[in-house]
Structure formats: structure tokens, C-alpha cells
Amino acid sequence: MDFDSQIGKSLALVGVALVALWVFRSKRPSKHFSLEELTTTSTGLSNVPGLAARGKLEKLANEVLEPMRERFGALQINSGFRSAAVNSAVNGSKTSSHLTGSAADLQALDGTPASTLAAWLYDSDLPLNQVIIYWNTGHLHVARDEGAKPYRRSFLQTYDGKNYEAWQPGGRRS
Ligand SMILES: [Zn+2]
View 1 (cartoon, helix red, strand yellow):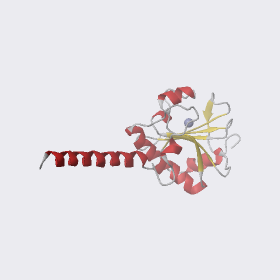
View 2 (cartoon, rainbow, N blue to C red):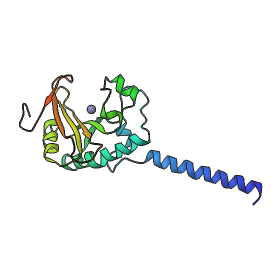
View 3 (cartoon, protein in one colour):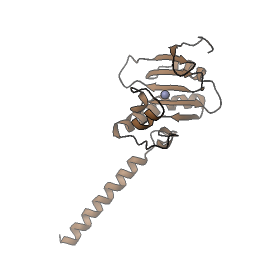
View 4 (tube, rainbow, N blue to C red):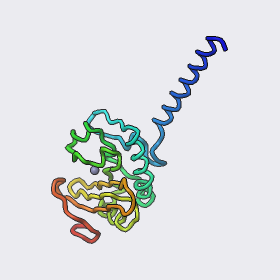
């Protein structure tokens, strides 16, 4: 093999690697949820998940969000993955599941109340770590359990985004 064709081969390999990287980076986390949706932020800050967070977003989307979408129709994702900078800009908890790509704040596009979504999740066997009803904003925080069964499945509600109390279907205002 002469020198030029070696260079040609190397360039071809680099090209294939770049295309593979591009395909990976633009791969949708799941059928109905795009990476753009799951990394949306109003802060204007960079919000690019690393490999581990990408994997967790994919699991969140496939194991939790897709079943919810199948039951309730299109979901509006207000916040999914958050980089450390984005999380602190929105005053997120330092241990927030949004940091690992395991949580999303959402609402049903058709106006189904967050408490109705929560009640359905409560009766489901989805791998949930925590579900929080935000009565003040109307959205639902849903976090996938990153571990194995038995899942934590903590259900909470808050009226001000600061104080949290346990919630169960049929509880106050649900
Ligand atoms: Zn949240």
C-alpha cells in the first residue's frame, strides 16, 4: 500500500467515526421523546448530557415517559436533564435526579391534572423513585428509580415548591 492510499484509508476511518458519533449524538432517547425535549432549558445555559446521563434519559423515556404518553397522550416536558449550571440557576436540589438524567418535570398537553397522572403512576408498576405533584405550577416531577426492585416509589405533593408532604390518591385536593 502506498503512502497516499494509507492517508486515504485513515481519512475514511475518521469519517466513519465522525458519522457514528453524529448518529449517536442525534439518536432519539425514545420513539416519542427527542433529546432536545429532554434537555430543554429556559436559562440559556449549555445543557449537554454526558454518556451516563444519555443512558439514563433513554431509560427514563422508554420505561416511564412512553407508558405515560401511551395512556395520556402528548406530554409537555418542562425540564428533563439539567447540567450542574442549569440546576443551580433554577435553584434545583443539589441531589436532584435531573442532574443524572433520571427525572422530568411535565404536564399532559390535554390538561389532565398532575394528580390524575400521579394516581395512575401510583397504581402502575413503573420503576419510580419519586413523584411530586406541584400544585403551585400544575406540573408533575417524575423520577425513575436507578436501582433494582423494590423501587422507592415515594409520592409527595407541594403547594409552594418548598414544603413537601406525603401524597396518595384520594388525598387532599387530588
Ligand atoms: Zn423535577
